[in-house]
Structure formats: structure tokens, C-alpha cells
Amino acid sequence: MHELSLISALVEEVSRDAQERGVSRITTVNLAVGKRAHALPHALLFCFDLIKQDTILADAQLIIEVVPPVFYCERCGLNEVHDKLWANCAHCGLPTVPAGGMELEIRGYEGDGPDARKENKN
Ligand SMILES: [Zn+2]
Image (cartoon, rainbow, N blue to C red; front, side, top):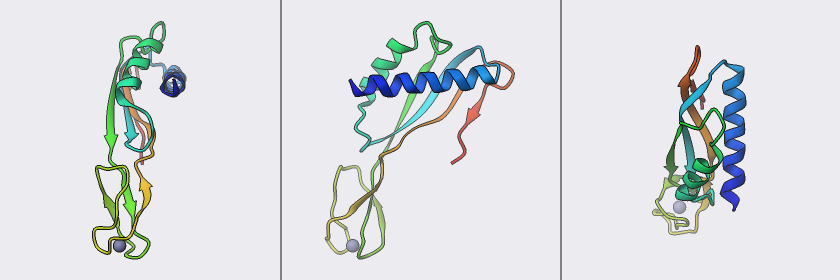
């Protein structure tokens, strides 16, 4: 399962970062998942519950934000957000190029410790 390796990388990354910052227990992890990222949210949640056991994320909740895909029209130069996996330009009707919605990134996490709140700035 693809999601298993994604989640084990996520748990590893958060654990390492939290330990460096003296955080002993993580309570929530916020993850942004692009709709085109080929990762199913329910599978990610299932894998998270399996992998978090015996880590400092054992009590943590994974919060997934599904990011809708963005499409770019090369003729009009416009970006459009669609809740679809492919789309034609709404203005000229040409096929558009995917320009977003592939992300799979940790947006931040919270936990107990001196400096336990982390937000990715982007
Ligand atoms: Zn167009």
C-alpha cells in the first residue's frame, strides 16, 4: 500500500522534528493532501492509526485537508480551481494543464512541550 510508506515517512519526520524541539507528545498533525496526489484520505487515516502506535504520535489525531486541483490554460493564462481530476478551460474550451492539487505536505502539528506548536510557512 502506497499510503503506508507516505504515512511512515510523515510519522518519522514529525517525530524527529518534535524530539529536536523537546516535544514529548503530539496531539494533532495537519496534513494537506492534493486531490491529484493519488493518496486516499481514508487509507491515510487507517495507516496513521497503525503506524503511530509506540511513537510520540500515539495519541495524535491526523487532520487531513483535501486540496482541490488547479488547472492552467496555456491560451488564456488563467488558473482555475475545479473539484475534478481533469477539465477544459471555461473560457476557450481547450484542455487545461494540471497546475496544483498534487501536494502531500505537513502543514503543522501540535503537542505538549516547551515549543510544541509548529506551522509551516508557505
Ligand atoms: Zn482558455
